[in-house]
Image (cartoon, rainbow, N blue to C red; front, side, top):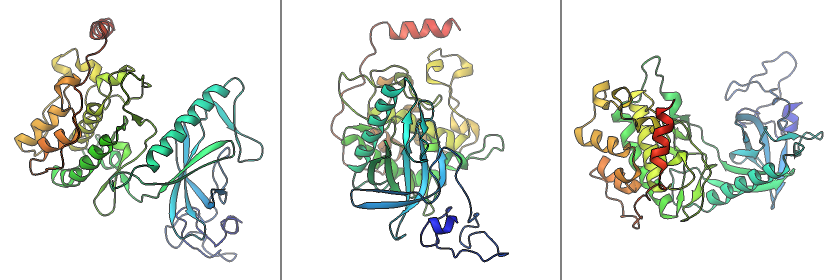
Length: 362
């Protein structure tokens, strides 16, 4: 029985305590209404799996989400005192589940790819575990290495991703009087993140969660990297939210997160995804961003100007730091000025010409 596997009769959906139903009784959780006998899909860890390491153990429940590189499960610590989210490194393109149902093993010929991805995953865990004093950033509790893979244990967030609060087809968007106030704290915390020499590189509506108390939380640091001059960065991007410099492996910095944040705010307010930054280089009227007020968004002129400044295509033309962007968007906000950041480096000679020729030749 699934409930027996979870020890104290925990619901696999919400990890709340639920007595095992007698024959003929309702089999749904009295707390969340979920199926008490829910099982995870094949190839994923079974409900009731216990992860143990470094003197800690966690009971896993149902799958919360799955991407190309990992799976996130709901769980709880030993004794059911705290709900957690546990992210497992499980890149389905280069790995599979072994016959024991727990161990992850790389596919033949993909050993090096798998090992490299696992190294990056553990690095993400270490980055998160070192972040303190940022309530707008998801908190890492622990990371474990077992089953030939790695796991990141994080605080469980019972909120709604911003992209689910917007529906372009139905014209549903987040009004500025609701979205802008909690953004102050989020932008301030991201500026603190930058002070620690870490850029997120994947700020987007699906990676920011609206919490029940009205605050915002930044998630998914799988693309986060330290700012190290001269170091090549992998190309990670989401069209519409990625700035132009993210289409190459050099030249990314705090201004990269500024563009992504501004694009996220623009989308939430207007329900319109900004045109791809590389296409905006063409400068055609059909690719020019419409002012939010022209789309019916009630923004003050200074708020609108700040948002469009953050969406400047050229890195040198937009705010260089999140603090600079926040102070323009919220004039009453006065966080401590972050350390000086060198201006966005000019792209390697010929980059814009090659990009222009490639786009023109489509």
